[in-house]
Image 1 (spheres, rainbow, N blue to C red):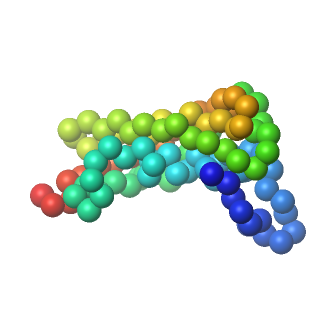
Image 2 (image 1 turned 90 degrees about the vertical axis):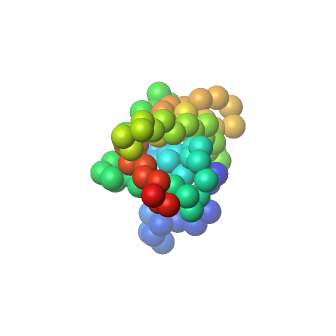
Length: 101
């Protein structure tokens, strides 16, 4: 993924900001259940981003997983990488509910 346009005309996105933008998709790309049947949110809108180096280039990949307990409490974990190697991790709290129940 990449951010194709600047968020403002005056400021170009830094490598860390590009990583944060992609990291926010972790809970959406990692879902392991049918959309429409289940609802999920990131209740605290907090992103924990751990970079061990800045990503090179515009493209950032994510290998994400979502873990949810029967109580509905869970977490999304995403490993972020650029075209060469991993660059870090992103974690988000999630709440899951069976929308049809």
